[in-house]
Picture 1 (cartoon, rainbow, N blue to C red):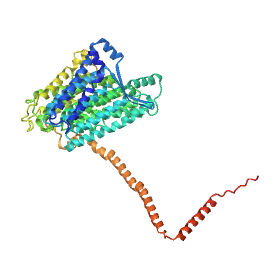
Picture 2 (picture 1 turned 45 degrees about the vertical axis):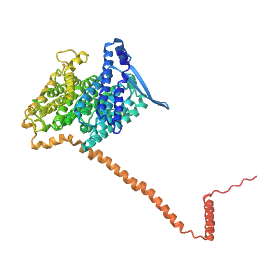
Picture 3 (picture 1 turned 135 degrees about the vertical axis):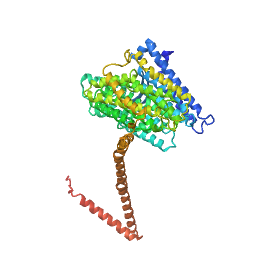
Picture 4 (picture 1 turned 90 degrees about the vertical axis):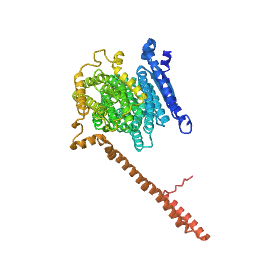
Length: 635
């Protein structure tokens, strides 16, 4: 039974996809008498089936020796031909591997908990069909993404996830900010997607395949034979990493994630915890190609390091709790890009593995506050520790899972990254980036905790009611998983069995950065301190950081202004040159026709004279145009 479930693991994306399609039946005018709730329960059921199948397949892999050996040395494969014509074959080739099963278990498990959470969060909302259908669509896309072995279909799935982002961000489409957020998120991600498409198309003639395993063999042949890179291959690699940069909200394609916070909070949980790491998953699958180009690896390091520091600084100035957490997402994933750029793909995998659960827990715990206090403005919250201690402890558990605080998993992964930077060509600079980012992330998380749970109650929190158990239960379950995650990773051999999982070289500087960043933030925010508010002379600095360092204004004055100027020039040339030429020639023809019409007198003598004159002129032109003498051939 379990082996059969493992062999049929390719069915897992189909369960939520069926639920998403079935949600269309609750559109207006099709099914209306039942109300929207049956749609949510149907999606919940199908997600539970997908999660159960993922767990059974993963259990079969670990408990059945034959199945485990086959999955390791001869993975289960499946293929579906999409296009086969004129020598071009494009198919969806999939692999059922251990990392894919682990990823699907995490994806489906979090989706199951979030959909339970969403039933409580959106209890009085009538947009269930669209919202729950989009959540299931996300799940189906992510599961298909981890199963596919094709770069082309990875791009296709990322495009579908971009469409899903647009739909789910625009759930409450009657609000102007929601419409703007959905549009900006879609257009910003489309920039990276278009560049990625160019790289995918250019890759096929060079490598001869779109399959990740085929690309791995091609890259190995280049390395082993010492063959130089094909011309333009560096540009292809730069195009390939543009897609993951956009999906992971890395500079300069980072503006979409905070705009997407206009969607309902349950979708924010999934987007920030699992959807954004879809781009990181594709980036890790491109590992063999990235190792061929030191230039591309350097670009990844620069992009990741700058995003890690800049995003964590911006998060410190945000007053919207969802936006503050969204910039911390970009900062953490920036560290993952640094690991990939340094060639530490095992370290990047560990960063990816320990990230989703703590981030989901942070958003779940803050969501219980947002829904019950009718605000997500940090300046309007405070004093909730005496009223809501359970979700406060959940937030602290999630924060500990992301900052470098032993024995939590974030410490182990960040220590590996710090050791990786110490062995790089710029150990002081990159090591300083990791330590500074960790200190800023720790400060940002403690700041959020202090402004929500510490201090004195405000008019918004003086009578903070308890939320439904449908929201508290998933939060406590995820808290338990985060607290037990270190032992789960130790038991599965990810980290060695030591008193503190992940402890090793450079652990003390990393722990010190956490204590400094978190400690200073605690001193300012756990008991409101005068220095927590910047002096009036520095208010401009806080406003600059709060508005994303005016990045959006910079884009409007440069990129957008250039596009508008080109559009205006194109409109002028079309109006003046193209339309002017065609309109001018047409007007000239009409004017000539009017003048010729005046020569029509109705007298046959004039017509005959004109005809004879034309024949004479044509004969003269033919005689003058052929000056060669006529040769006579004598008999």
